[in-house]
Every structure is written in structure tokens, then in C-alpha cells.
Image 1 (cartoon, one colour):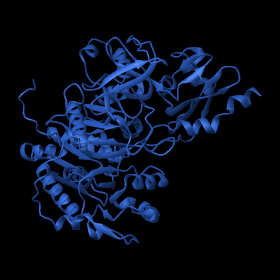
Image 2 (cartoon, one colour):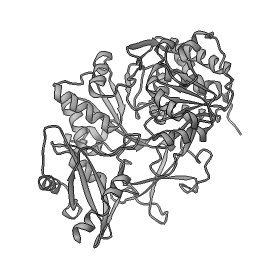
Image 3 (spheres, rainbow, N blue to C red):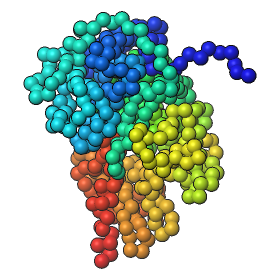
Image 4 (spheres, rainbow, N blue to C red):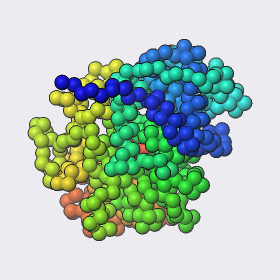
Length: 541
């Protein structure tokens, strides 16, 4: 016997409709790429989204067509989140930090018909124009007068909207219809596409906004520094809209000074982004003796948050770090380490250590760790195993791709090695490919990095496993020091020895000017392993 409940579809357009009707005075503030601040309400955004949808229809965009964006976090990009998906087309957000050949590949692989591009990325598109065979139109997200001379045949987004009515009845879509497309960063091989449905997008936003996850409510002012071209800015343009929260979009300004100006001026109380962004903001505040007074929560994902960052936000800014973890294949939020009764019972030092864990699974995400034979491992905080997940916003395959090696028996293998403790808190030990296998034992590169980041002279570091003639692999640490600070390799090794077993300490510590990163801000360890693969072998020789 089935229940007698209505079967209304969960669609992206319903989120914006709800905000327009019941949170219509909620504010969206955006720094424009052409300069200046733009400010309007959810009601205004809904009207302009309908105008954008009408413009796309006039350009013959129909159900399942792909519309791509190369854009920062702005109000125009926000409007396209709803205009494209609301029509039944598929929003394909492209990371401009990918290599040009990767961008050309994914535009052609997705068969994008329209590309919407910010001013700063016009030169990139100009360089690729002869390689983009599926594109029919290029729309520049700016007024016509702000568009420079270009060899491209372009349309002005603002001119398109000005020609359209703001009346539109969003089509009734099936909730399993595709809504958005995002490609992985592709550190090896071509990037792979993950195709999100309306249902998965709405459920993910609903879960993310809840009290025990990100606690996004109508009374919050939220600044997603995580780009809208990266896994839909972790779903924040949907969850914030659903709750009617004030949304602050930073545009291209992600440096410490630009972020501080927005945080202070708009009284932002929640930040979301990757550790490298927050390291820059913390350094800026230290250099100028500034405090992030309005900030209550800093959500950190993409890479592990070092203990020193958690401590600095708390002690210097009275801000709580919410450690989160997820993947493009998971929409992306999988676990969150938010405030809890357990934390309230701990000392500060104990709480900081607990906050280094990535947290409990969000309801809807099932999770387990397994050994190499696939047998489940205990939740004791000690056993390391491969992390498997499944759930309603977890991908079941890649878009137009035959490789299903990451899926087995209905579970997705994340490629991460993790522990789960007796309280249900998951902690990433390492990427499976980054774990250092030394003399039959495993060494976590993340543990070493987090400890090194606690040294006052260390701005950033990376630990890699390199071949060793006796132990198979041994750790090598590469360090970037803070401006005006210095530390020797021996001093740093002594520091690490206070927290790390001697056999786990790096065999060599190298000081470098900068470290390579993926387009999403993660350390590019593959390049480092290639560069330094012979360093210990040559030393032994």
C-alpha cells in the first residue's frame, strides 16, 4: 500500500520561486567584474532569471541542451543557475583554472551550445575559438559598453535581458531530469563529467541548510568564496536561496584585502572556501591587525584544515571552523563537523583536535571503510580503510564515460583512506595514491602537513612519498615559509618530532618559493612526485 501524499517534483526552479514569494526582501550582494557593487533582492533575481530564460529560449535552447559558463561568483552567474536549469536545459559550469586544452575538451565533450563568459575570460575563449566546434553563441556577462573589441561574435547578456519580458511559467519537469554538469579537475587523464539531477540538487541543498550541517537560515549572511564553477559552490546558491539568507558574492576578488572589505562591509557571518584562501585572509588580518568581528562560522573543505588554522580562527577572530568533506561526485557535501554536545565537553586543545576530523555523514549519505578485500572495518578511530559512499546525491556513473571502476555493488569508492571513530566522526588519513608506504607501514602525508603548518614560520607545505632503496618509500617535505620568517630543516624536524613518531619524520625537508596546485586549489602532488622521485635514491648513491 502506498501513502496518500502529493507527488510534487523537486526542481531547481521551485527554490527560486519559494524565495521570491516568501523571502522576497532577502538580499544578494555581488562584486561585478566590470567594477562596483551590485545589490538587489531575491524578487529582483527571480525576475531577471526569467528574463534570462526567455532570452535562452529565443536562442533556441531547449530541454537537455547544455549551456556553459566561464564566470566568477556574481549575480549574473547566479541568475543562470536558475534560468538554465529551470528551462530543463543543463548548466555546465567550467573551471577557468583548468588547462586551456582541458577547457576545450570538456566544452566539446559536453556539446555545449552556448557559452556565457565573464570579461576576464574573453582572451581565453579567443585563444580557443577554433577548437570549440559545438558552440553556437557566446554571451558576455556584461553590459554592451563594457565589452572590449574582440574577434569573437558575441552577445551582451544585459542587452539580451533588456529585450525580454520577465513573465514566464517555469515548465513542469521530472525531478530526475538533469539540471547541472560539473567536471572533475582531472589530475590524471581527461576530466570526467558528473551530471546532477533536479532531485539530487534540491535534496543536497535541503540537507546542507539544516541545523546540524551548515545551519543556513534566514538570519545569516553568507559569503561563498568557493567558486560557483566548482561543484556549484558547494550548493550554496541553492541552500542560501532556499533559506532566504543574505548572499554575498565576491566576484573575482579573492585576495585578503577584497574579502575583508566585503566581510566587514556586509557583516558576513559565514564563510565557505578552501584552506589556501583562508591562509591568505588570516595573513592579511595579521599584517594589518584586523579582526573578522562579524564572522561566526568558517566552512573549510577541498583539503584538510590544519589545526593551526582552526586555532587561529578561534583565538584571533572568535570564529568556529566547520570542517567538511565531499567530492564532485557527491554534489559535493558528504560529512560535516559542526558544533556538537561532544565538543562542549572538551578543553580547547581537545576540541581543536576533534575539529581536525571531517565529521559525521550528512543524513542521506551512507558511508563505510573497507580493507583491500572489501571487508568492513571497525569504527574505532584506529583502523584505516578505503572510504565508500552511496546516497541520493552521489553519482552512479560518469557522463558519457564507460569507466565504472570506482563503483562496486552500489557503492562509490572515493579514493580516500579514512578512519571512523566510535562517535561516528570520519577523518581523512590521505588520498589512497598519497599514502606513503614505508617498510610495510603506512604514513599519512596529511598528518605531517598539519603538524608542520602549526610552526609559526610555515605558510604552506606538502609531503610526498618518494622511492627509497631500503624502505620502498619515505616522506619528503616541501615547505613555503611566511614572508619575513625563517626556519631550518633541522629545527622543523625537531618541531615535528614533538608530535610525530621518529620513523614517520621526513627524510628530507626542502624549502621552495611556491607549491603547485590543482585548478580547485588542492596540492598537485603528482607533479611533485615526478620532480623529486630520485632525490633519496641519488642521496643514497
